[in-house]
Length: 91
Image (cartoon, rainbow, N blue to C red; front, side, top):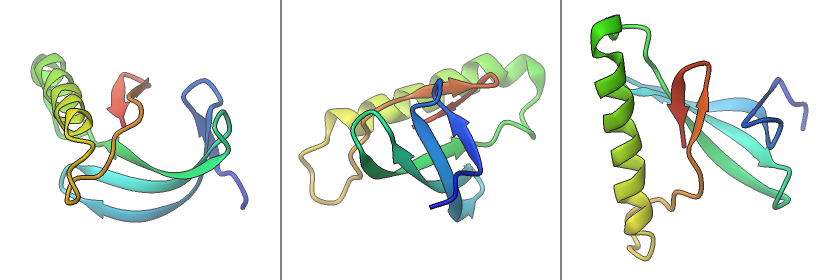
C-alpha cells in the first residue's frame, strides 16, 4: 500500500479514499501503532462558517464518542480514536 499522507502524528498512513458524502470522506489507512488496516472518517469543515466551527467540531466529537460507547452493537462501527488534524476531527 502506498501512503498518500500521514495523520495523527504519523500513526495513520492514509492510502486511498473509499467513500464520501455530505459529512466528509472515508479513507483506507494503516494504523502503524497496532499494525492493522482501519477506516478513517475525515469530517468536512469547508462549508461551515468560522463562527459555527467550534460547535460543529464538538458535535462531531460527541458523535464519535457516542459510537465508541456502543462498540458492542452489531450495526454500529467501532470507533478507536479521534484525531484533530488541521483543526478538524477525524475518527
